[in-house]
Image 1 (spheres, rainbow, N blue to C red):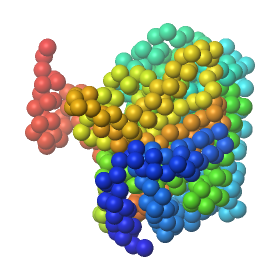
Image 2 (cartoon, one colour):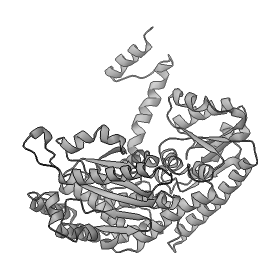
Image 3 (cartoon, helix red, strand yellow):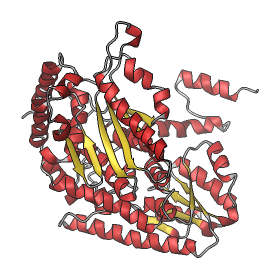
Length: 505
């Protein structure tokens, strides 16, 4: 089936379902709650409140089959050059699982295993020192994934080190992070594949001066020479590879801050959870494949229902950074307007991802979700078992989680238009049995694989990110004028703003 025909077929199903409310779809199918749910390990997913029926859902699964999703997963795991614009594999799966017999995948897994051994040596050396705090300096994929995992998991698990993060080039971020720390008891990790990232080098220079001791500077980079020229001994540089994109790299030595915060055993459990999801998506048929269900639901909402925004709401404070990580993972991977062959895409691609932590968000932007003019599909993420003793609080949290998905879907009619809730807001509910490293690993890997499914349907490259480079290049051109030096300023608005910035105050 041609791509255009696939999307036309899905839109036909959407038109057929348009007169039927989401509440009516649920009420008309007593088995829907059970049949539109799927469990993989510690993760239960319910798609019962998405606005499709059984024929539409079957069309989605058939579209995935005809697009070649199972074969595409095999190519990904086998290390084929799925990053076509850069002619590279995308072997983040090899960082946590060994599911391919191909030489390139086995070699990558061997390098990943060696990197784990090197991480253990770094941790052991730090444990033998007086270091109590570690500052991780990176941005984007070198920051968001590790920051999420540390924030989510560092509470109940043993970890000797307090881990802090600096990403923004704004000097206020570094100043605030370092103010309460003792440089004599602090180590730093600079994370940059090229060791040329402006934000990381500028913040790294602040750390180097503040520490006053290069022996407590470590790096994770593919460019050992640049790290050495910065003052970091090659023995303190852990590897990165061009076959792992930044937003997929938390499973590598980029995850050293995670291992420092929760212990190496906890980090390996994180990898094991992702490996569980890898095995599932590689082996499960499309009609029982959680990544296919999730990815094709995203395609349905974007291309059949024409919904341009996607919410993600974590009903667990420990997962408050999940939306930020997913913003990068999804929007950097799928924010493309040309297909792999260079031709324009024929349909919209990635929606805008955004979100926050419940119940806080219920008192901010949920007004717009319930009664606004735009329908925003949402992923709700909850945790069944808490790791604290405040059970009544947890029951209230779960009650709100369930209530919001119900209320958004069903709404309430009223003779007073101000008191009317239209409903019809679709959502997926993802429930973790408990927030363990293994469960978090499975959850994050699910989203990675869902992104890949969407990229196959849209025929875009999920693994390059040229869109982030233009602004950086322009910023480099504007630095000399901000230093009072001559510069080539061609944009009249920028010229006027530079004059305003440089005015005597």
